[in-house]
Image (tube, rainbow, N blue to C red):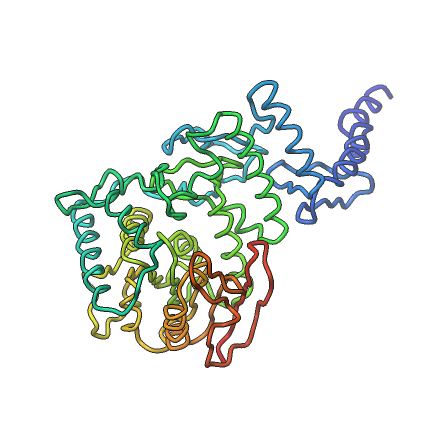
Length: 435
Protein backbone atom coordinates (compact mmCIF):
# COMPACT_ATOMS: atom_id res chain seq x y z
CA UNK A 1 0.00 0.00 0.00
CA UNK A 2 2.79 2.41 0.89
CA UNK A 3 4.63 1.65 -2.37
CA UNK A 4 1.40 2.17 -4.30
CA UNK A 5 0.87 5.51 -2.57
CA UNK A 6 4.47 6.66 -3.19
CA UNK A 7 4.25 5.60 -6.83
CA UNK A 8 1.02 7.59 -7.19
CA UNK A 9 2.61 10.68 -5.61
CA UNK A 10 5.81 10.55 -7.65
CA UNK A 11 5.09 8.83 -10.98
CA UNK A 12 1.39 8.55 -11.72
CA UNK A 13 -0.14 10.54 -14.59
CA UNK A 14 -2.56 11.99 -12.04
CA UNK A 15 -0.04 12.74 -9.29
CA UNK A 16 -0.82 15.91 -7.31
CA UNK A 17 2.17 17.80 -8.73
CA UNK A 18 0.88 17.14 -12.26
CA UNK A 19 -2.47 18.66 -11.27
CA UNK A 20 -0.69 21.70 -9.87
CA UNK A 21 1.28 22.06 -13.08
CA UNK A 22 -1.96 21.90 -15.06
CA UNK A 23 -3.49 24.84 -13.18
CA UNK A 24 -0.18 26.70 -13.30
CA UNK A 25 -0.12 26.35 -17.10
CA UNK A 26 -3.74 27.49 -17.30
CA UNK A 27 -2.72 30.64 -15.42
CA UNK A 28 0.32 31.25 -17.63
CA UNK A 29 -1.87 30.87 -20.71
CA UNK A 30 -3.06 34.46 -20.24
CA UNK A 31 0.48 35.56 -21.21
CA UNK A 32 0.74 33.43 -24.39
CA UNK A 33 -0.53 34.26 -27.86
CA UNK A 34 -2.41 31.84 -30.09
CA UNK A 35 0.78 30.54 -31.70
CA UNK A 36 1.68 28.82 -28.40
CA UNK A 37 0.03 25.42 -28.65
CA UNK A 38 -1.35 23.97 -25.40
CA UNK A 39 -3.10 20.63 -25.72
CA UNK A 40 -3.50 17.53 -23.60
CA UNK A 41 -5.29 14.30 -24.45
CA UNK A 42 -5.76 13.65 -20.75
CA UNK A 43 -8.05 15.63 -18.45
CA UNK A 44 -6.32 18.17 -16.16
CA UNK A 45 -2.87 17.27 -17.44
CA UNK A 46 -1.63 20.29 -19.38
CA UNK A 47 2.15 20.55 -19.46
CA UNK A 48 4.27 23.66 -19.91
CA UNK A 49 5.97 23.54 -23.34
CA UNK A 50 9.70 24.28 -23.70
CA UNK A 51 10.48 27.99 -23.58
CA UNK A 52 11.56 28.02 -27.25
CA UNK A 53 7.97 27.11 -28.20
CA UNK A 54 6.32 29.88 -26.17
CA UNK A 55 5.25 33.16 -27.78
CA UNK A 56 3.97 36.09 -25.74
CA UNK A 57 0.89 38.24 -26.27
CA UNK A 58 0.77 41.91 -25.22
CA UNK A 59 0.37 41.05 -21.54
CA UNK A 60 3.17 38.49 -21.75
CA UNK A 61 5.47 40.98 -23.48
CA UNK A 62 4.70 43.55 -20.81
CA UNK A 63 5.64 41.18 -17.97
CA UNK A 64 8.66 39.85 -19.89
CA UNK A 65 9.97 43.38 -20.36
CA UNK A 66 9.23 44.33 -16.75
CA UNK A 67 11.00 41.30 -15.24
CA UNK A 68 14.06 41.76 -17.42
CA UNK A 69 14.11 45.52 -16.86
CA UNK A 70 14.18 44.98 -13.09
CA UNK A 71 16.98 42.42 -13.48
CA UNK A 72 18.99 44.86 -15.61
CA UNK A 73 18.62 47.70 -13.10
CA UNK A 74 19.45 45.56 -10.07
CA UNK A 75 22.05 43.15 -11.44
CA UNK A 76 22.94 44.39 -14.96
CA UNK A 77 21.91 40.94 -16.21
CA UNK A 78 19.04 39.59 -18.28
CA UNK A 79 16.55 37.45 -16.40
CA UNK A 80 16.10 35.51 -19.65
CA UNK A 81 19.03 33.10 -20.05
CA UNK A 82 18.33 32.67 -23.77
CA UNK A 83 19.09 36.35 -24.39
CA UNK A 84 22.50 37.96 -24.81
CA UNK A 85 24.25 40.76 -26.68
CA UNK A 86 27.25 40.01 -28.85
CA UNK A 87 30.43 41.67 -27.70
CA UNK A 88 31.83 41.28 -31.20
CA UNK A 89 30.64 39.96 -34.55
CA UNK A 90 32.75 36.84 -33.92
CA UNK A 91 31.03 36.04 -30.63
CA UNK A 92 29.78 32.47 -31.01
CA UNK A 93 29.27 31.74 -27.33
CA UNK A 94 25.54 31.29 -27.99
CA UNK A 95 26.15 28.27 -30.24
CA UNK A 96 25.20 25.09 -28.40
CA UNK A 97 26.36 21.52 -28.97
CA UNK A 98 23.39 19.90 -27.25
CA UNK A 99 19.74 20.78 -27.07
CA UNK A 100 17.78 22.41 -24.25
CA UNK A 101 14.48 24.21 -23.67
CA UNK A 102 15.83 27.66 -24.57
CA UNK A 103 16.27 27.30 -28.34
CA UNK A 104 15.15 24.95 -31.14
CA UNK A 105 17.15 21.74 -31.56
CA UNK A 106 18.94 20.83 -33.71
CA UNK A 107 20.31 24.34 -34.28
CA UNK A 108 18.17 25.98 -36.95
CA UNK A 109 19.48 29.55 -37.23
CA UNK A 110 20.59 30.18 -40.82
CA UNK A 111 23.83 31.97 -39.97
CA UNK A 112 25.25 28.76 -38.50
CA UNK A 113 25.41 27.23 -42.00
CA UNK A 114 27.39 30.08 -43.55
CA UNK A 115 31.07 30.06 -44.43
CA UNK A 116 33.63 31.96 -42.37
CA UNK A 117 36.23 31.84 -45.14
CA UNK A 118 37.05 35.20 -46.73
CA UNK A 119 36.53 35.65 -50.46
CA UNK A 120 39.59 35.69 -52.71
CA UNK A 121 41.33 38.75 -54.16
CA UNK A 122 40.09 38.01 -57.67
CA UNK A 123 36.51 38.54 -56.58
CA UNK A 124 37.42 41.82 -54.85
CA UNK A 125 38.96 42.89 -58.17
CA UNK A 126 35.80 41.88 -60.03
CA UNK A 127 33.69 43.83 -57.53
CA UNK A 128 35.75 46.96 -58.15
CA UNK A 129 35.63 46.58 -61.93
CA UNK A 130 31.87 46.15 -61.79
CA UNK A 131 31.54 49.27 -59.67
CA UNK A 132 33.62 51.33 -62.12
CA UNK A 133 31.61 50.05 -65.07
CA UNK A 134 28.36 50.85 -63.23
CA UNK A 135 29.43 54.45 -62.66
CA UNK A 136 30.36 54.82 -66.34
CA UNK A 137 27.07 53.23 -67.43
CA UNK A 138 25.14 55.53 -65.10
CA UNK A 139 26.69 58.65 -66.64
CA UNK A 140 25.26 57.63 -70.02
CA UNK A 141 21.72 57.39 -68.65
CA UNK A 142 19.13 60.02 -67.83
CA UNK A 143 18.91 59.03 -64.16
CA UNK A 144 19.44 62.02 -61.92
CA UNK A 145 20.37 61.45 -58.31
CA UNK A 146 18.73 63.54 -55.63
CA UNK A 147 20.92 66.01 -53.70
CA UNK A 148 20.54 63.61 -50.75
CA UNK A 149 22.03 60.68 -52.67
CA UNK A 150 24.79 62.83 -54.21
CA UNK A 151 25.87 63.58 -50.65
CA UNK A 152 25.77 59.89 -49.76
CA UNK A 153 27.75 58.99 -52.90
CA UNK A 154 30.59 61.27 -51.82
CA UNK A 155 30.48 59.74 -48.34
CA UNK A 156 30.50 56.23 -49.85
CA UNK A 157 33.57 56.97 -51.96
CA UNK A 158 35.48 58.25 -48.94
CA UNK A 159 34.59 55.09 -47.02
CA UNK A 160 34.99 52.30 -49.56
CA UNK A 161 37.27 53.65 -52.33
CA UNK A 162 40.90 54.39 -51.56
CA UNK A 163 42.87 57.33 -52.99
CA UNK A 164 44.63 54.99 -55.43
CA UNK A 165 41.22 54.03 -56.87
CA UNK A 166 41.11 50.61 -55.25
CA UNK A 167 38.56 49.11 -52.90
CA UNK A 168 39.15 49.69 -49.22
CA UNK A 169 38.88 45.98 -48.40
CA UNK A 170 39.02 46.50 -44.64
CA UNK A 171 36.01 48.83 -44.66
CA UNK A 172 34.10 46.58 -47.05
CA UNK A 173 34.67 43.56 -44.82
CA UNK A 174 33.37 45.65 -41.90
CA UNK A 175 30.65 47.54 -43.73
CA UNK A 176 28.00 46.69 -41.11
CA UNK A 177 30.26 47.31 -38.13
CA UNK A 178 29.05 50.75 -37.00
CA UNK A 179 30.51 52.72 -39.90
CA UNK A 180 29.70 56.40 -39.39
CA UNK A 181 27.22 57.14 -42.17
CA UNK A 182 24.04 59.02 -42.97
CA UNK A 183 22.86 56.14 -45.18
CA UNK A 184 20.14 54.10 -43.49
CA UNK A 185 21.40 50.86 -45.03
CA UNK A 186 24.63 51.26 -43.02
CA UNK A 187 23.34 53.21 -40.04
CA UNK A 188 20.41 51.01 -39.05
CA UNK A 189 22.51 47.85 -38.63
CA UNK A 190 23.02 48.72 -34.99
CA UNK A 191 19.83 50.45 -33.90
CA UNK A 192 19.31 47.99 -31.07
CA UNK A 193 22.91 47.87 -29.87
CA UNK A 194 25.48 50.58 -30.42
CA UNK A 195 28.92 51.28 -28.97
CA UNK A 196 27.85 54.90 -28.36
CA UNK A 197 25.17 53.71 -25.94
CA UNK A 198 25.71 52.68 -22.35
CA UNK A 199 25.52 49.01 -21.44
CA UNK A 200 22.15 49.59 -19.74
CA UNK A 201 20.64 51.30 -22.80
CA UNK A 202 21.81 48.51 -25.11
CA UNK A 203 20.34 45.89 -22.79
CA UNK A 204 17.00 47.71 -22.64
CA UNK A 205 16.99 48.00 -26.45
CA UNK A 206 17.62 44.26 -26.63
CA UNK A 207 14.51 43.67 -24.51
CA UNK A 208 12.39 45.79 -26.87
CA UNK A 209 13.76 43.83 -29.81
CA UNK A 210 12.77 40.51 -28.21
CA UNK A 211 9.30 41.89 -27.57
CA UNK A 212 9.13 42.80 -31.25
CA UNK A 213 10.16 39.21 -32.09
CA UNK A 214 7.17 37.93 -30.11
CA UNK A 215 4.91 40.51 -31.72
CA UNK A 216 6.02 39.34 -35.16
CA UNK A 217 5.17 35.77 -34.16
CA UNK A 218 1.49 36.74 -34.40
CA UNK A 219 1.75 37.54 -38.14
CA UNK A 220 4.73 35.44 -39.31
CA UNK A 221 4.98 31.74 -40.14
CA UNK A 222 6.74 30.15 -37.14
CA UNK A 223 8.67 27.78 -39.41
CA UNK A 224 10.30 30.90 -40.84
CA UNK A 225 10.59 32.87 -37.60
CA UNK A 226 12.51 30.02 -35.93
CA UNK A 227 15.25 29.89 -38.58
CA UNK A 228 15.73 33.49 -39.65
CA UNK A 229 18.99 34.87 -38.34
CA UNK A 230 21.17 37.69 -39.58
CA UNK A 231 24.39 36.92 -41.40
CA UNK A 232 27.81 37.49 -39.84
CA UNK A 233 29.01 39.10 -43.09
CA UNK A 234 29.87 42.75 -42.59
CA UNK A 235 30.83 42.10 -38.96
CA UNK A 236 27.76 43.66 -37.38
CA UNK A 237 26.78 42.92 -33.80
CA UNK A 238 23.37 41.51 -32.99
CA UNK A 239 21.08 40.52 -30.17
CA UNK A 240 21.22 36.75 -29.68
CA UNK A 241 17.88 35.22 -28.76
CA UNK A 242 16.96 31.53 -28.90
CA UNK A 243 20.12 30.89 -30.90
CA UNK A 244 19.27 33.51 -33.55
CA UNK A 245 21.02 36.76 -34.49
CA UNK A 246 18.35 39.46 -34.43
CA UNK A 247 18.03 43.10 -35.41
CA UNK A 248 15.19 45.24 -36.74
CA UNK A 249 16.07 44.72 -40.41
CA UNK A 250 16.14 40.91 -40.24
CA UNK A 251 12.74 40.86 -38.52
CA UNK A 252 11.32 43.06 -41.29
CA UNK A 253 12.70 40.64 -43.88
CA UNK A 254 11.14 37.79 -41.92
CA UNK A 255 7.72 39.30 -42.44
CA UNK A 256 8.28 39.77 -46.18
CA UNK A 257 9.54 36.20 -46.57
CA UNK A 258 6.62 34.76 -44.63
CA UNK A 259 4.10 36.68 -46.73
CA UNK A 260 5.64 35.52 -49.99
CA UNK A 261 6.10 31.90 -48.99
CA UNK A 262 2.56 31.53 -47.66
CA UNK A 263 0.77 33.33 -50.48
CA UNK A 264 2.57 31.99 -53.55
CA UNK A 265 2.38 28.51 -54.99
CA UNK A 266 6.10 28.20 -55.70
CA UNK A 267 7.77 24.85 -55.08
CA UNK A 268 11.04 24.86 -53.16
CA UNK A 269 12.84 23.00 -55.95
CA UNK A 270 11.40 25.15 -58.74
CA UNK A 271 13.76 27.05 -61.05
CA UNK A 272 12.49 30.56 -60.36
CA UNK A 273 13.71 34.00 -61.36
CA UNK A 274 13.29 36.47 -58.49
CA UNK A 275 14.21 40.13 -58.95
CA UNK A 276 14.53 42.60 -56.07
CA UNK A 277 14.65 46.22 -57.23
CA UNK A 278 16.30 48.36 -54.59
CA UNK A 279 17.14 45.29 -52.51
CA UNK A 280 20.06 46.89 -50.65
CA UNK A 281 23.02 44.61 -50.04
CA UNK A 282 20.89 41.50 -50.65
CA UNK A 283 19.52 40.72 -47.21
CA UNK A 284 16.09 39.63 -48.41
CA UNK A 285 17.48 37.71 -51.41
CA UNK A 286 19.76 35.82 -49.01
CA UNK A 287 16.70 34.52 -47.17
CA UNK A 288 14.76 33.76 -50.34
CA UNK A 289 17.73 31.77 -51.67
CA UNK A 290 17.63 29.54 -48.59
CA UNK A 291 13.94 28.78 -49.22
CA UNK A 292 14.05 28.54 -53.03
CA UNK A 293 17.44 26.93 -53.47
CA UNK A 294 17.29 26.57 -57.27
CA UNK A 295 16.23 30.15 -57.91
CA UNK A 296 18.10 32.80 -59.87
CA UNK A 297 18.07 35.94 -57.71
CA UNK A 298 18.55 39.27 -59.49
CA UNK A 299 19.40 42.41 -57.53
CA UNK A 300 19.00 45.83 -59.19
CA UNK A 301 20.51 48.66 -57.20
CA UNK A 302 22.63 51.80 -57.23
CA UNK A 303 26.32 51.20 -58.07
CA UNK A 304 27.40 51.74 -54.47
CA UNK A 305 24.91 49.29 -53.04
CA UNK A 306 25.74 46.77 -55.77
CA UNK A 307 29.31 46.86 -54.49
CA UNK A 308 28.14 45.93 -50.98
CA UNK A 309 25.82 43.23 -52.32
CA UNK A 310 28.56 41.72 -54.48
CA UNK A 311 30.62 41.15 -51.35
CA UNK A 312 27.75 40.19 -49.03
CA UNK A 313 26.20 37.54 -51.29
CA UNK A 314 29.51 36.03 -52.41
CA UNK A 315 30.65 35.70 -48.80
CA UNK A 316 27.35 34.07 -47.80
CA UNK A 317 27.27 31.77 -50.84
CA UNK A 318 30.90 31.17 -51.86
CA UNK A 319 30.05 28.17 -54.07
CA UNK A 320 27.20 29.84 -55.94
CA UNK A 321 27.57 31.36 -59.41
CA UNK A 322 27.30 35.16 -59.37
CA UNK A 323 27.04 37.40 -62.44
CA UNK A 324 28.32 40.95 -61.88
CA UNK A 325 28.10 44.00 -64.12
CA UNK A 326 31.69 43.58 -65.32
CA UNK A 327 30.66 40.29 -66.98
CA UNK A 328 27.21 41.40 -68.07
CA UNK A 329 26.54 42.04 -71.74
CA UNK A 330 23.43 43.10 -73.58
CA UNK A 331 23.40 39.79 -75.39
CA UNK A 332 20.78 37.26 -74.38
CA UNK A 333 22.42 35.62 -71.39
CA UNK A 334 20.79 32.66 -69.75
CA UNK A 335 20.22 33.95 -66.24
CA UNK A 336 19.09 30.51 -65.13
CA UNK A 337 22.77 29.52 -65.26
CA UNK A 338 23.43 31.84 -62.30
CA UNK A 339 22.38 31.85 -58.68
CA UNK A 340 22.74 35.61 -58.31
CA UNK A 341 22.82 38.47 -60.81
CA UNK A 342 23.83 41.89 -59.43
CA UNK A 343 23.23 44.84 -61.75
CA UNK A 344 23.02 48.64 -61.55
CA UNK A 345 19.71 50.27 -62.41
CA UNK A 346 20.89 51.23 -65.90
CA UNK A 347 21.03 47.54 -66.90
CA UNK A 348 17.49 46.54 -65.98
CA UNK A 349 16.24 47.56 -69.41
CA UNK A 350 18.48 44.86 -70.93
CA UNK A 351 16.74 42.02 -69.10
CA UNK A 352 14.40 40.01 -71.38
CA UNK A 353 10.64 40.52 -71.42
CA UNK A 354 8.52 38.43 -69.03
CA UNK A 355 11.60 36.75 -67.60
CA UNK A 356 10.86 37.27 -63.89
CA UNK A 357 8.54 35.06 -61.84
CA UNK A 358 8.53 37.33 -58.79
CA UNK A 359 9.36 41.03 -58.83
CA UNK A 360 9.96 42.71 -55.46
CA UNK A 361 10.27 46.30 -54.31
CA UNK A 362 10.18 47.24 -50.64
CA UNK A 363 10.51 50.81 -49.39
CA UNK A 364 12.49 52.15 -52.32
CA UNK A 365 9.99 53.11 -55.04
CA UNK A 366 8.65 55.61 -52.53
CA UNK A 367 12.12 57.17 -52.24
CA UNK A 368 12.56 57.86 -55.97
CA UNK A 369 11.57 60.94 -57.92
CA UNK A 370 8.53 60.69 -60.18
CA UNK A 371 10.47 60.13 -63.40
CA UNK A 372 12.50 57.28 -61.93
CA UNK A 373 9.39 55.71 -60.41
CA UNK A 374 7.64 55.73 -63.79
CA UNK A 375 10.70 54.13 -65.41
CA UNK A 376 10.70 51.29 -62.88
CA UNK A 377 6.95 50.69 -63.13
CA UNK A 378 7.37 50.30 -66.89
CA UNK A 379 10.20 47.83 -66.32
CA UNK A 380 8.26 45.92 -63.67
CA UNK A 381 5.32 45.44 -66.01
CA UNK A 382 7.60 44.51 -68.91
CA UNK A 383 9.66 41.95 -66.99
CA UNK A 384 7.14 40.32 -64.67
CA UNK A 385 5.31 37.26 -65.91
CA UNK A 386 3.69 36.22 -62.62
CA UNK A 387 3.85 38.22 -59.39
CA UNK A 388 4.78 41.68 -58.12
CA UNK A 389 5.29 42.35 -54.39
CA UNK A 390 5.48 45.92 -53.12
CA UNK A 391 5.65 47.49 -49.67
CA UNK A 392 5.74 51.26 -50.17
CA UNK A 393 4.22 54.53 -49.03
CA UNK A 394 0.74 54.99 -50.44
CA UNK A 395 0.92 58.80 -50.40
CA UNK A 396 3.57 61.16 -51.74
CA UNK A 397 6.49 62.39 -49.65
CA UNK A 398 7.86 65.57 -51.12
CA UNK A 399 10.00 67.19 -48.42
CA UNK A 400 12.87 64.68 -48.73
CA UNK A 401 12.48 62.50 -51.82
CA UNK A 402 10.15 64.47 -54.13
CA UNK A 403 8.38 61.16 -54.62
CA UNK A 404 4.79 60.34 -55.57
CA UNK A 405 3.13 57.57 -53.60
CA UNK A 406 1.92 54.11 -54.61
CA UNK A 407 -1.49 55.58 -55.49
CA UNK A 408 0.14 57.64 -58.26
CA UNK A 409 2.09 54.83 -59.93
CA UNK A 410 0.97 54.44 -63.53
CA UNK A 411 0.13 50.76 -63.97
CA UNK A 412 -0.93 49.76 -67.48
CA UNK A 413 -1.33 45.99 -67.00
CA UNK A 414 -4.13 44.25 -65.12
CA UNK A 415 -3.02 43.10 -61.65
CA UNK A 416 -5.19 40.87 -59.47
CA UNK A 417 -4.44 41.46 -55.80
CA UNK A 418 -3.53 38.56 -53.55
CA UNK A 419 -2.54 40.86 -50.67
CA UNK A 420 -3.75 44.44 -50.29
CA UNK A 421 -3.36 45.86 -46.80
CA UNK A 422 -1.92 48.62 -44.63
CA UNK A 423 0.93 47.13 -42.61
CA UNK A 424 2.75 47.70 -39.35
CA UNK A 425 5.44 49.42 -41.46
CA UNK A 426 2.90 52.23 -42.10
CA UNK A 427 3.06 51.37 -45.78
CA UNK A 428 0.77 49.76 -48.31
CA UNK A 429 1.52 46.08 -48.92
CA UNK A 430 0.54 44.73 -52.32
CA UNK A 431 1.06 41.30 -53.83
CA UNK A 432 -0.42 41.16 -57.30
CA UNK A 433 -0.69 38.48 -59.93
CA UNK A 434 -0.40 39.62 -63.51
CA UNK A 435 -3.49 38.94 -65.60
